[in-house]
Image (cartoon, rainbow, N blue to C red):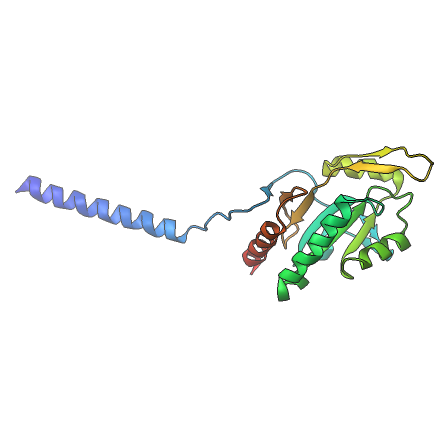
Length: 204
């Protein structure tokens, strides 16, 4: 009789424990499955102080409440840069009303040729809300180091016909200005669209 009572008590205790574990699991946030590379918690690319093509000094916190996609390139890039910017413009459209909560930043690695007027005209080719940022040549190397991006001038046939080798991915920040994702060039834009939706949903 004692063994039977002990067994019933033990079963009841395990049942309560299992219920508690189940409740805890149900209340725990589900880990988001991103398409892009999850770099949450990275100790780099945390902030910047750069002038935009309108002459306004910008910082990452200026865009609080928005998902920020930050890309490094240059206006005379023949393929990677225009392709990336075109895809980002399409992503903004695909987000519908949430498109207003996306901010695209284009950081030039060619400040010698990419003057504010050139950058402003370049952004207008894609979306009027996109902002181009630039650092003085003597500050660009420091910025590149902080953001772990690569760029190198490749001489052309004339002093002004050079090209720029450069990193081709984009950083994605959440609405609190925290670096969350790195998306590689050539990735499916639909995947990035869904990643942005996840980040916006997490903020709501």
